[in-house]
Length: 427
Ligand code: HAM
Image 1 (tube, helix red, strand yellow):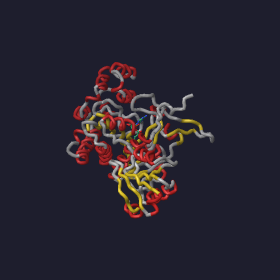
Image 2 (tube, helix red, strand yellow):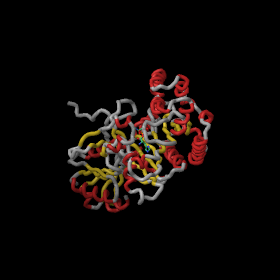
Image 3 (tube, protein in one colour):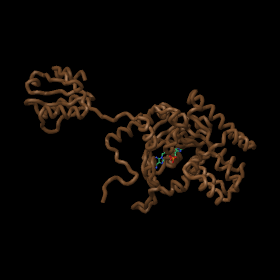
Image 4 (cartoon, helix red, strand yellow):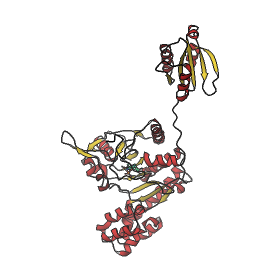
């Protein structure tokens, strides 16, 4: 029996954990700059929270079971239903718009593939209670600024933006029958990963006429002007106007290079069922990796889960693909944890002497190690180097009696004699 981690689950050895902390650190820093505050919820939820609204794809991937009290439960596969539940429960008391972020670990029983594991950490950033498209723009700006925080540029990452209402209107306008819309959405969502002939067959099977099928298959090439030309009626004109305003706001928030970061792409559907308006995903420009991030507006989810009727918009950004991209561009800092000071003992000084000095240094905030068993000085100095110590303080019985010690700079081995109390007080 193998006792390794389960397929799709990761062990985080210190190096990997340092990388994870680096990613979380940048996430938190950018979220803070935009005025978002952190929250969390339980990793185990009632199964029904997901079966109601998340959509078939994610429900098929649930880790669910019956608990010892007979409850149907599931490990959270996403954060949005928990957020909707939490906000719904206290909707009146919370200041609006709500600007919250979280970094939950999520669980999905996915088919094994590059960039998709069975657990991942996902930054969630959401604004609840604001129907205006300004909130949509604010969120995409957060996602782009996170890319910048990792030194990724518009030549590395592109945001593909769309609008579910525009896509739906466009599909109707090009002749997709009402009843075939969900099937068309599902095919468009997978166009990039499925051969064209297979997609065409699926569309035909869903009862979509040949001419409309060709237009569906060409959805990724449709420009905003194509969409505007296909949609003539007034309600869609309002949506189009809103979309154009969204792009203007992005220019203001993202800056002069906004056009390089953001691309209109009607084929962005999003796999989750609850989105109602503008949706977006971030991808690596080379198209080698899965989506880095995805989100959009979901104005009906809170009400449909029985909470307050509040509009909402947000995104989720996973640590897996992002980590791959940062490593591929050599932007991951080397994770060499280093201590400040090693306390070594020589001659007749004892481990207890090392402990006393270590305790005083630690009380002053330094990170300090010493040998946990008696060792020759040379061995201790080797251990100090391996621990990445900047300096080693060498305690010897005769020096200690005079209140002195020797401090060795590890980079070049230079040694100086110090007054121990004064040196500790300095550090
Ligand atoms: P999602 O598109 O399912 O959206 O996931 C968002 C991101 O999480 C993906 O773009 C990807 O980076 C990462 N991700 C998802 N599944 C996996 C996996 N199996 N392995 C590794 N990474 C993964 C949501 O979950 C929405 N709830 C996001 C949201 C928040 N919408 C509004 N607010």
